[in-house]
Image 1 (cartoon, rainbow, N blue to C red):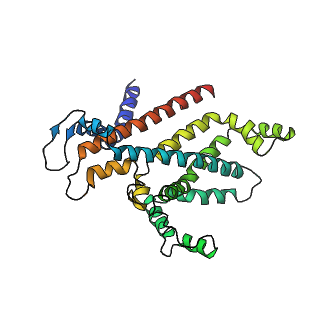
Image 2: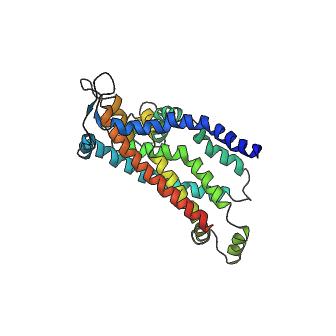
Image 3: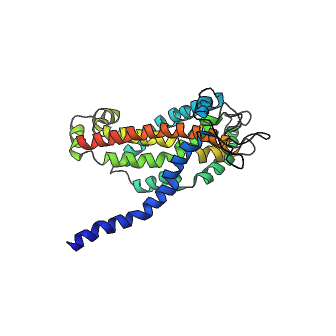
Length: 300
């Protein structure tokens, strides 16, 4: 009996370090953001003035906030379908047991995932540079361009460029998810499809996808949540420019809190209100993901 009583205590003691870290770096910032969102406060020496929900009402009429929200939505809709489709196509190819060196290809595709985002942002900024950038040089040598393109300096090309880099960066992770889902398809399903002369796109569309549909929904939501957290990549590549054309909600929050224009004060309370709304958006997607995961677990 004494041993049985000690075991739960040991478990609770083992949980204490994780709970302390979660409280310091997860739960406290969430509560603090909700608290500061109710104040007019610069975040430094000026006194906090309680204004209730005024920060939230200002956000509802702030064109910069809605512009950042729209660009976050554009980024989400631009990255997730590409990421899902390309990674699924690669996963189906690499799932073929007859393909030699498939592990090598998986490793090469997964390498950008483990590479620091800041390093990728700096390298791609150099690659896309209009001044002696390798990509512009190659396109000019092939005769596809008559003059260099400023991929990250034009409002017309900056978002497609960042979207392409983001998809390349996280393609390997989504591929791993798809490969894990494809492992659940029984081998006799493939044999039955071969007997019916079902292969290629028909095999994927009518046989494989219906089986892995619960996994596909979870992968879709994971990719959607990830596409809303792009602060390091955009900050290292464009800093939200040019002229706010790549400023997503995370960059808007940072700019409002710490990087306002010269002669104006920082607005930590206003940024906290924007962070609360952004957090609610991500939380809603996470709750949908949890519900779908639970439902797929019950039906499997």
